Amino acid sequence: MKCLICSGDSAGEVCNKCIRLEKILYQKEWSYKEGMFLKKSEDYRIAISNMRISGRVAICDNPKGLNSRLDNMSHYLMNVKECTQVSYQGKKTLMIGIENNTGENAKYSRYCFLPGFDDVEQLVNAIFDAKKKAASLTERIRQSNGISTGSVEVTPTQTSADIKVSAPVAAPASMPTPSAASVATPVPKPVSPSPAAAAAAAKPASAPKPVPSTYDTVALSGIATDINEFETKIKKLKVLRDNGILSEEEYLEEKKKLVSIF
Ligand SMILES: [Zn+2]
Image (cartoon, rainbow, N blue to C red):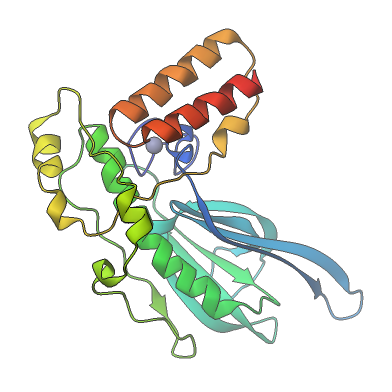
């Protein structure tokens, strides 16, 4: 299948190259006892990053929660269509509807149930916030790959009336962050940019949000087996740096991590 962010070949909805820029923004683990008589406690987990929603939840192909199975899931955040409180096994439960309609990948709908989860509003608000970050990150990755055709839209998330979602921040520039502003992230300098990427890079004024200055690296902890892989990773890091996705500091830090892995 194709990566929904960069269109590169990928085993999942987001490829390993993009996952390298993933930053976890929210996560929670909890236990829930299921069943009427033989109560068995199961561990659940949910995480929201600037790209994906992932975790271990009850998964169904129908919104009624019939024949659910507890399993790991991971989806591109923009595919989250719905967060609603429903009745699941007789109890009020958060359901997250996920739908893929984009790209060349197979279309599907999937329903995730989070029984016993008590942090609903924080989670739903985290999804709203993270979608904005996912949109800007997606845009930057596409630009650096020369495949950007414009700004990436934040997909709508439907919620039920009993979930309070904070009003969308209309003007993020109104939040003063003097310390962050003084540590300005270097403006991306695309190497031999395509006309589209150049045009997009030429209007940074339309992007009021400061570029996030750090990215946790999840993928790099994957064990690399030989020196070729090390060299490939260093090369990729350089590309990310040269395209302004990683700052010089981040680049050096990631390089240091790589060296320590090998
Ligand atoms: Zn990708």
